[in-house]
Length: 126
Image (cartoon, rainbow, N blue to C red; front, top):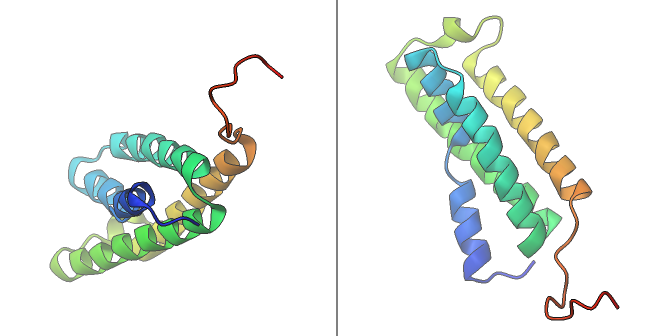
C-alpha cells in the first residue's frame, strides 16, 4: 500500500461517519434517502480504492469509518433516546449490520471490477 496524497485523502474521506449520518437522518427525518446516497458514495469510494490502493487499505478505511460512526452513535445515545426507533435492533446492532453489508458490497466491487491499466498511452490493443 503506497501512502501518497491520494490515499491519505481517500482515507480521510472514509473517516466520515457515513452509517451514523444515515441512521441519524432516518431517526430525525424518517427518511431513507441518505442510506441510498451512502451506498452510492461508498461504492464509488470502493472503486477508487481498487484503482489506487490495496485491499488492506479498503479494510483499514472501513474500520476507521465504523469507529467514527460508533463514536457518534454512542454520543447520540447519551443525548437522545433513539434506541426504540430501530426495533428489533439497538442502534449499535444496526450500525454493525449496516457496516457489514456495506463492507460486503465493497468487497464485491473490489473483486468484480477491472483493475486500472498500467499503460494508458497504448491504445492499440496489443
